[in-house]
Amino acid sequence: MSVTVSLSPTQLSWNDFLPVDSLPDGSGDDAQTATTMPELSGIRPVMAQGRFSLPDVTLSVTLDRTQTLVIKTAQKTADLLKHEQGHFDITVLTVRALAKELEQLKAGSPAALGQHMSAALSKHQQRADMLEKKYDHETENSRNQDSQKKWNDAIDSAMKGSGILILQGMPL
Image 1 (tube, helix red, strand yellow):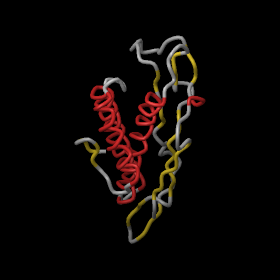
Image 2 (tube, rainbow, N blue to C red; image 1 turned 90 degrees about the vertical axis):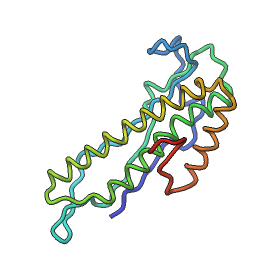
Image 3 (tube, rainbow, N blue to C red; image 1 turned 135 degrees about the vertical axis):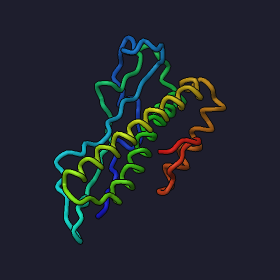
Image 4 (cartoon, one colour; image 1 turned 30 degrees about the vertical axis):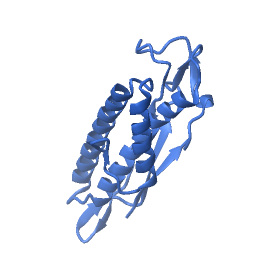
């Protein structure tokens, strides 16, 4: 049984962003990237050696294009786009960690397996949220160039490796 992760797009471009007059959160930021965590519904468990586990599954990470926004008057720089790519990549990394956990799940019943899946999804969603807050705080939403470079390097390194489970001191 394997759980794989697919992503679309792999690299953000300004064409992925919906131009708006202001962001709904009133933050004053120039852009926001909204990603979707994968759905874990409709998966039929398989039984082996008296235990239920997941079949081969692909988890998809996509943009929520209705909430991936850029201020119309913002300077659409490569640095700002790289910061937004970081948000997308944090979700990808978190879903990769979720996939590793899901591959190991075994339970005595489909219902118990479903509970374990829900708990794992919730845990990784919370981790993604915490990482994104830390990312924005430390980079000052891309304005702190030194911190942004550290995050860019850490995220890029993690995206290249398949076994990384810690990002900037926080679990994925």
